[in-house]
Length: 349
Length: 145
Image (cartoon, rainbow over all chains, first blue to last red; front, side):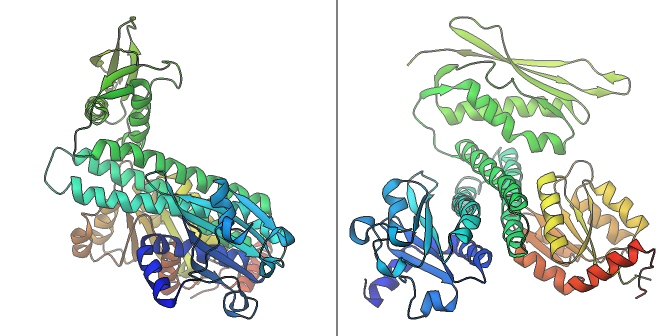
């Protein structure tokens, strides 16, 4: 256990994680109420950073360990904070499986929180008195961890915008895409909040689970789009590397899906998996921007009601062409298609 | 005149189906009546036929944007308050000019939205919801304001 001064310093150092996690700890606590419970946040070493729960579990004589307590598995045995960190994934510890006797009345479960750089940022856990309640909270716990991860990534995105998009550049499209990818984060948060309230209202677990699955899918979509967006928005040129151009085209087309829908353009990307792996040796960011501009041109040229088709054509052993075809809508159907092609020289690692 | 039920009716306008449906469920279980629209044009069509207490309005949508919907409402002196929800960071000035009542940046904190709606139009109590539901089944009428 740390001194009060050290606890304060620990919490100050980890304020970024605590701030991102607090709304989710409260949601978990709401979902677990009115039973005795605690929702806990730990750092990557197993130090408890924050606890939200009922008064007896947080401050009573039988309270769970508070901020500053070290629950690393090596020090404290099996528990809902240290064990998920040691195992690198979700863990449930019930009753006497806990090494710490004070935890024996509780069913605990925890799952790591992954930072935007894919390292472990910390761990989130719940401790409740009944195993049935614990099972009910499992999917909310997963979704809350995803919610925190999405919020950490969103904070990084805001920094990126300040860093990369301050100067007037050609990046209006990139800025607009940022608005679009935030939509999935927004939907995920609403879904998690809804699932918590459905749980509180005693809705059927299947209903709650279906909402949580939807919320999780939205959060995962946001994180996938956000990673692609960061790659495109970055100002620095990267060293050339092996890039799967088929995968990059698929991700960029996916990123442009909302933009296409808003412009009422049907965007037809290459079918999933049809192209296989196509390695080129290039700066991924520069290549991504080139592809983005190319496909965005297709959307512009197709216009409202039109169709933009992206396809790999003319495959040869050493090269392949990416073809974007824009077919504008006309009063009588579809107009004359316009086409652009880029050739990619394929390589092997 | 706005009826008692209109004073608890919220119009959600969002082209994203996930957001629209989950917001609708969230507002429903918190006691609001909800109607939804996937485009600005649909929203204006709803508003021409029925009164609502408040609109939760997305900005980037196919066809009419949320800003264009607000401009239309202001031009026609429509009194309905708007909760404007956007991922854009460059619309605040325009929203002030248009006297938009509430502006939330995506991703929103749903608790904040519920608090705003609570202020603008208190939701039906659960027992009142149950009573209204049975009145509708027996062909009852909506309470006047």
